[in-house]
Length: 145
Ligand SMILES: CC(C)(COP(=O)(O)OP(=O)(O)OC[C@H]1O[C@@H](n2cnc3c(N)ncnc32)[C@H](O)[C@@H]1OP(=O)(O)O)[C@@H](O)C(=O)NCCC(=O)NCCS
Image (tube, rainbow, N blue to C red; front, side, top):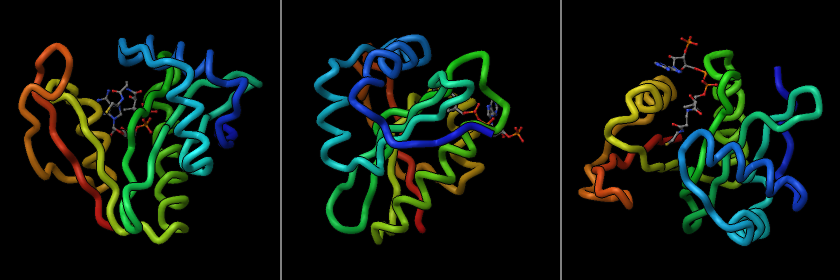
């Protein structure tokens, strides 16, 4: 089991490292700080032995929707149930805000993540043509609470 807590200002560098390693994306520290300010409970990290090994950054979209913006568990900590713990916590925190629908975007080629989300009853709502910067298509996936 990992300890799950809210993102803090001083986590930005480590979180950025996990995102770069896991998704090959780099975002400025200002994005992490901004999202954490907008909905602190929706930006969580997983900590093991004092080190952050997982992150999930979400946002609130209107009154009844939340969105998973970035989600990653650092290799080699995957497939140990940590993603499940993080997702369960995010669903709980969304429900506490009155959220009825959780959305996310995922690359069409990311079959392991799609399989993971389907396990949590997300379904594909639509295709996002050339959604990513390298022009790969994405799927929008949705879970109803
Ligand atoms: C997607 C991700 C967050 C899942 O986290 P995780 O800690 O590996 O997930 P869990 O160990 O809780 O896995 C739960 C279930 O998801 C499915 N799953 C997880 N990894 C999988 C894989 N590589 N292939 C197929 N199914 C997988 C399995 O059904 C698994 O259940 P099981 O352990 O009973 O077999 C993680 O794999 C990750 O960080 N991937 C790289 C970044 C990424 O793609 N993020 C999502 C972008 S939208």
